[in-house]
Length: 239
Image 1 (cartoon, rainbow, N blue to C red):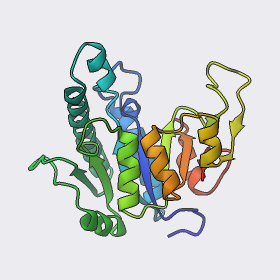
Image 2 (image 1 turned 60 degrees about the vertical axis):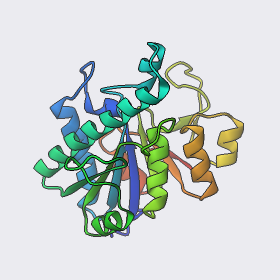
Image 3 (image 1 turned 120 degrees about the horizontal axis):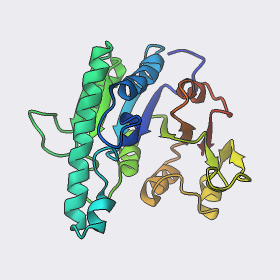
């Protein structure tokens, strides 16, 4: 492990949209390769990485519910979409020379084995990227909650939430030019200000277990490495 990094093992939460590039939905090979390159860069320097990906490039449960679908069925469809994204990432990582393992919260064999905590920790220690798919296995929970749950189960040092902005602001910086950016904020202050860092379940789990959250701009190719180095200009840490 390089001494220049603040964390040894991290859970990276990325959106499904990061895989679609400029396309309306689905996958863009160059966008997926860009994700792979950023993660590979830090893994090559000794950081152990687990990953959770959303499903927004394929399916959003809110879309199904707005069309009159049952919430449970809509959420199950979202879980299946995360499995598709995980398999896509695994393939591209392996093409790049990174050993990758997909584990699923629901029975998906032979597509992917079930989540196994001990196997995951051994894989991370061996330098394997582990991708968690299928959400928590239950409806009504988001991939934010999946990321937090798996990070706690596998002894990660932090949850890194990849977004389109370089941290947490007092308001939406795309809508309010006067919005001010935090370099660091406490869980209690984020709650008091009603800042939507993660969904409430995931946020509460991090707060109750002293698991730091770092929000950063994943579209900046240098940002992932910089947040691991403790660069306060690269992201906001909630701790």
